[in-house]
Length: 272
Image: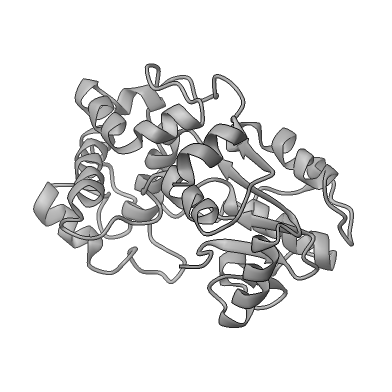
């Protein structure tokens, strides 16, 4: 199994377990900058050099050796499940991707046909009922996670706990888990605990939101997208995420966590 979704600086100053839709582009660029004194030119997800990634075969033994011996500071970042799934919908389902095409080829036509979802036409720019379509997408997301039908769950909407647990189960330990909603505060803790070649000033670092502009803008407050049934589905899919990462399930309007992450609890509950 190894350590899927794990990135590490070339200097081995820090190890990061990627959780999709949780500021991963910005975190990756900060890691790249801390080693090279410049940002990667393009989307950091496309970088195949200048950084170790589990997806690069040559990096795997280096990452595995480091993580299993806990040689470097290891961290990850989480996000409110309500805003995370909304972001996935607008970016991956309604948006046109970097390659100019729809995400995962036949996924959107399948959703239109089987779930009656609208996505704003060919270019994603036409008006449509965002709330109705999102709720239907949520049903689809639940079906993929619960029954793996009509397809396997996608990394962008599978639970954060699942991503984070693979690192622990295979022998890794986290030193820090912080919130996207308190990004600078959480990332500063990481920077304070590592020796990097180039100093990173979080106040001046741009936000690398690679999904921004792919899809239509969200027209309504977060809470408007979630009725009683939607919240029931959210609990079914993301119960562990809400509980472990202290997010407010009862109030979708509150994006902030209710308390800090308990690392001992995370390792105990996700390590089996």
